[in-house]
Image 1 (cartoon, rainbow, N blue to C red):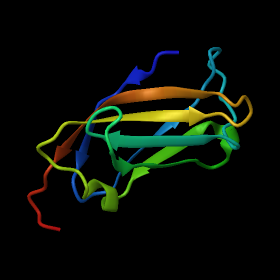
Image 2: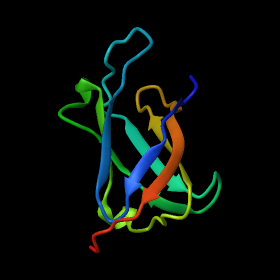
Image 3: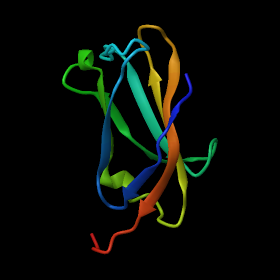
Length: 115
């Protein structure tokens, strides 16, 4: 399956997060309780890691809901003058397969308030 394109706008020095629900091709919610999700931000593919999301299933893995958070400590690593790239991978424990779910760019919004 081709990864969905989703570009992010992140405020520097603030927590950023989103949730997704994993469904199969028949639109049935997938139990992700034993699976791993990882999302990273880099200046370009194969470049050094800049920031990492914390991704985990929420409520119960049977809900299919995955929460990804980029905490303040990670958003502080981002520069408002650079366009970054990100992606989210699903590492299925039951099948042993990996799949890129989402990819896109990351733009950073500098703050007016000094934190």
